[in-house]
Image (cartoon, rainbow over all chains, first blue to last red):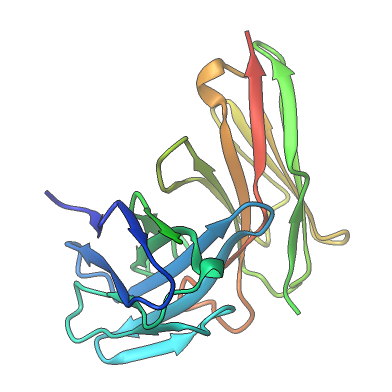
Length: 114
Length: 114
Protein backbone atom coordinates (compact mmCIF):
# COMPACT_ATOMS: atom_id res chain seq x y z
CA UNK A 1 0.00 0.00 0.00
CA UNK A 2 1.15 3.54 -0.67
CA UNK A 3 2.14 5.61 2.31
CA UNK A 4 4.64 5.72 5.10
CA UNK A 5 5.05 2.76 7.40
CA UNK A 6 7.02 2.26 10.59
CA UNK A 7 8.13 -0.93 12.27
CA UNK A 8 7.96 -2.18 14.87
CA UNK A 9 4.90 -0.41 16.25
CA UNK A 10 5.79 -1.47 19.78
CA UNK A 11 9.15 -2.44 21.22
CA UNK A 12 10.39 -3.18 24.73
CA UNK A 13 14.12 -3.38 25.25
CA UNK A 14 16.70 -3.15 27.99
CA UNK A 15 19.23 -0.47 28.80
CA UNK A 16 22.37 -0.84 26.71
CA UNK A 17 20.83 -2.78 23.85
CA UNK A 18 20.86 -1.63 20.26
CA UNK A 19 17.49 -0.94 18.69
CA UNK A 20 16.63 -0.03 15.12
CA UNK A 21 13.34 1.56 14.13
CA UNK A 22 12.45 1.22 10.48
CA UNK A 23 10.68 3.72 8.24
CA UNK A 24 9.60 3.17 4.66
CA UNK A 25 7.76 5.52 2.30
CA UNK A 26 6.40 4.80 -1.15
CA UNK A 27 6.01 8.34 -2.48
CA UNK A 28 9.67 8.94 -3.37
CA UNK A 29 9.62 12.03 -1.18
CA UNK A 30 13.00 13.71 -0.93
CA UNK A 31 12.81 14.66 2.71
CA UNK A 32 12.44 12.33 5.66
CA UNK A 33 12.39 13.08 9.37
CA UNK A 34 12.50 11.39 12.73
CA UNK A 35 10.69 13.03 15.65
CA UNK A 36 10.17 11.87 19.19
CA UNK A 37 7.04 12.70 21.13
CA UNK A 38 7.16 13.12 24.89
CA UNK A 39 4.58 14.49 27.27
CA UNK A 40 5.14 18.19 27.81
CA UNK A 41 7.63 18.48 24.95
CA UNK A 42 5.49 17.97 21.90
CA UNK A 43 7.48 16.70 18.95
CA UNK A 44 11.21 17.21 18.82
CA UNK A 45 13.28 16.61 15.71
CA UNK A 46 16.02 14.00 16.05
CA UNK A 47 17.44 13.78 12.52
CA UNK A 48 16.34 14.60 9.03
CA UNK A 49 17.44 13.80 5.53
CA UNK A 50 17.16 15.87 2.37
CA UNK A 51 17.97 13.00 -0.01
CA UNK A 52 19.70 9.65 -0.15
CA UNK A 53 23.08 9.81 1.60
CA UNK A 54 22.36 13.29 3.01
CA UNK A 55 21.44 13.50 6.69
CA UNK A 56 21.57 16.22 9.30
CA UNK A 57 21.06 16.62 13.01
CA UNK A 58 17.92 18.02 14.51
CA UNK A 59 17.24 19.33 17.98
CA UNK A 60 17.95 16.14 19.99
CA UNK A 61 20.36 13.88 18.02
CA UNK A 62 22.52 12.53 20.86
CA UNK A 63 22.35 8.75 21.23
CA UNK A 64 20.84 8.21 17.78
CA UNK A 65 22.25 7.25 14.40
CA UNK A 66 20.52 7.40 11.02
CA UNK A 67 21.31 6.32 7.50
CA UNK A 68 19.65 6.83 4.13
CA UNK A 69 21.13 4.54 1.51
CA UNK A 70 17.84 4.45 -0.43
CA UNK A 71 15.32 7.24 -0.90
CA UNK A 72 12.47 5.17 0.49
CA UNK A 73 14.08 4.02 3.75
CA UNK A 74 15.25 5.99 6.75
CA UNK A 75 16.13 3.76 9.71
CA UNK A 76 16.82 5.18 13.17
CA UNK A 77 19.23 3.31 15.44
CA UNK A 78 19.69 3.68 19.15
CA UNK A 79 23.19 2.31 19.60
CA UNK A 80 22.94 1.80 23.36
CA UNK A 81 19.43 2.45 24.58
CA UNK A 82 18.85 4.47 27.75
CA UNK A 83 15.69 4.91 29.83
CA UNK A 84 15.46 8.53 28.70
CA UNK A 85 14.92 7.26 25.17
CA UNK A 86 11.59 5.73 26.16
CA UNK A 87 9.26 7.62 23.85
CA UNK A 88 7.00 7.46 20.84
CA UNK A 89 8.99 7.90 17.64
CA UNK A 90 7.44 9.27 14.49
CA UNK A 91 8.86 9.12 11.02
CA UNK A 92 7.65 11.64 8.46
CA UNK A 93 8.29 12.48 4.85
CA UNK A 94 7.84 15.56 2.73
CA UNK A 95 7.84 16.64 -0.85
CA UNK A 96 8.58 20.23 0.01
CA UNK A 97 7.52 21.50 -3.38
CA UNK A 98 3.86 21.08 -2.44
CA UNK A 99 1.59 22.69 0.16
CA UNK A 100 4.37 24.57 1.86
CA UNK A 101 6.14 21.38 2.86
CA UNK A 102 3.35 19.29 4.38
CA UNK A 103 4.71 16.41 6.44
CA UNK A 104 3.18 12.96 6.14
CA UNK A 105 3.55 10.95 9.33
CA UNK A 106 3.76 7.28 10.05
CA UNK A 107 1.69 5.81 12.87
CA UNK A 108 4.55 5.85 15.34
CA UNK A 109 6.78 3.36 17.12
CA UNK A 110 6.32 3.16 20.87
CA UNK A 111 9.64 2.26 22.51
CA UNK A 112 10.06 1.33 26.16
CA UNK A 113 13.56 1.00 27.59
CA UNK A 114 13.68 -0.88 30.89
CA UNK B 1 16.11 30.12 19.51
CA UNK B 2 12.97 29.01 17.78
CA UNK B 3 10.07 28.21 20.03
CA UNK B 4 6.38 27.46 19.63
CA UNK B 5 4.12 27.66 22.67
CA UNK B 6 0.61 26.34 23.21
CA UNK B 7 -1.67 25.83 26.15
CA UNK B 8 -1.85 22.14 27.02
CA UNK B 9 -5.55 21.50 27.51
CA UNK B 10 -8.95 22.78 26.39
CA UNK B 11 -12.36 21.40 27.27
CA UNK B 12 -15.55 22.43 25.47
CA UNK B 13 -19.14 21.21 25.13
CA UNK B 14 -20.32 19.66 21.90
CA UNK B 15 -21.74 22.32 19.60
CA UNK B 16 -19.65 25.13 21.11
CA UNK B 17 -16.73 26.79 19.34
CA UNK B 18 -13.17 25.87 20.28
CA UNK B 19 -10.26 28.27 20.04
CA UNK B 20 -6.75 26.93 20.31
CA UNK B 21 -3.97 29.47 20.60
CA UNK B 22 -0.30 29.40 19.70
CA UNK B 23 2.62 31.81 19.86
CA UNK B 24 5.80 31.47 17.83
CA UNK B 25 9.13 33.22 17.73
CA UNK B 26 10.45 33.08 14.17
CA UNK B 27 9.03 36.11 12.38
CA UNK B 28 10.50 34.87 9.09
CA UNK B 29 8.30 31.76 9.01
CA UNK B 30 6.67 31.51 5.60
CA UNK B 31 4.08 28.94 6.58
CA UNK B 32 2.36 28.14 9.84
CA UNK B 33 0.54 24.87 10.34
CA UNK B 34 -2.06 23.12 12.41
CA UNK B 35 -1.74 19.36 12.72
CA UNK B 36 -4.20 16.99 14.39
CA UNK B 37 -3.26 13.80 16.20
CA UNK B 38 -5.94 11.27 17.06
CA UNK B 39 -5.27 8.66 19.75
CA UNK B 40 -2.70 6.06 18.72
CA UNK B 41 -2.05 7.68 15.37
CA UNK B 42 0.45 9.94 13.67
CA UNK B 43 -0.13 13.61 12.95
CA UNK B 44 -2.18 14.76 10.00
CA UNK B 45 -2.14 18.20 8.46
CA UNK B 46 -5.35 20.02 9.29
CA UNK B 47 -4.68 23.35 7.66
CA UNK B 48 -1.94 25.86 7.06
CA UNK B 49 -1.65 29.58 6.44
CA UNK B 50 0.86 31.50 4.42
CA UNK B 51 2.52 34.31 6.32
CA UNK B 52 1.13 37.06 4.08
CA UNK B 53 -2.44 36.13 5.07
CA UNK B 54 -4.38 37.24 8.14
CA UNK B 55 -7.12 34.69 7.98
CA UNK B 56 -7.97 31.44 6.30
CA UNK B 57 -11.31 29.65 6.47
CA UNK B 58 -11.93 26.04 5.56
CA UNK B 59 -15.41 24.73 6.40
CA UNK B 60 -15.59 24.64 10.23
CA UNK B 61 -11.99 25.75 10.65
CA UNK B 62 -10.80 29.36 10.84
CA UNK B 63 -7.14 30.23 11.21
CA UNK B 64 -6.20 33.72 12.37
CA UNK B 65 -2.66 35.04 12.14
CA UNK B 66 -1.43 38.12 13.98
CA UNK B 67 2.10 38.66 12.69
CA UNK B 68 2.76 41.64 14.92
CA UNK B 69 2.15 39.59 18.07
CA UNK B 70 3.37 36.31 16.49
CA UNK B 71 0.10 34.73 17.47
CA UNK B 72 -1.77 32.00 15.62
CA UNK B 73 -5.18 30.63 16.51
CA UNK B 74 -7.40 27.81 15.29
CA UNK B 75 -11.13 28.12 15.72
CA UNK B 76 -13.33 25.07 15.28
CA UNK B 77 -16.99 25.94 14.89
CA UNK B 78 -19.73 23.58 16.10
CA UNK B 79 -17.20 21.31 17.80
CA UNK B 80 -18.04 17.61 17.63
CA UNK B 81 -16.90 14.70 19.78
CA UNK B 82 -14.90 13.50 16.77
CA UNK B 83 -12.81 16.65 17.09
CA UNK B 84 -11.34 15.36 20.35
CA UNK B 85 -7.61 15.07 19.65
CA UNK B 86 -4.29 16.76 20.22
CA UNK B 87 -3.72 19.82 18.04
CA UNK B 88 -0.20 20.94 17.21
CA UNK B 89 0.86 24.32 15.98
CA UNK B 90 4.04 24.31 13.88
CA UNK B 91 6.27 26.71 12.04
CA UNK B 92 8.96 26.22 9.47
CA UNK B 93 12.34 26.20 11.21
CA UNK B 94 14.74 29.05 10.57
CA UNK B 95 16.47 28.66 7.23
CA UNK B 96 14.34 25.62 6.48
CA UNK B 97 11.80 27.00 4.06
CA UNK B 98 12.84 24.48 1.42
CA UNK B 99 13.08 21.42 3.63
CA UNK B 100 9.74 21.12 5.37
CA UNK B 101 11.60 20.97 8.67
CA UNK B 102 9.01 22.00 11.23
CA UNK B 103 9.20 23.20 14.81
CA UNK B 104 6.20 21.95 16.79
CA UNK B 105 4.50 23.25 19.87
CA UNK B 106 3.74 20.99 22.82
CA UNK B 107 0.25 20.23 21.55
CA UNK B 108 -3.17 21.19 22.95
CA UNK B 109 -5.43 18.34 24.02
CA UNK B 110 -9.00 19.19 23.05
CA UNK B 111 -11.66 17.40 25.06
CA UNK B 112 -15.21 17.64 23.72
CA UNK B 113 -17.93 16.77 26.20
CA UNK B 114 -21.28 15.55 24.87
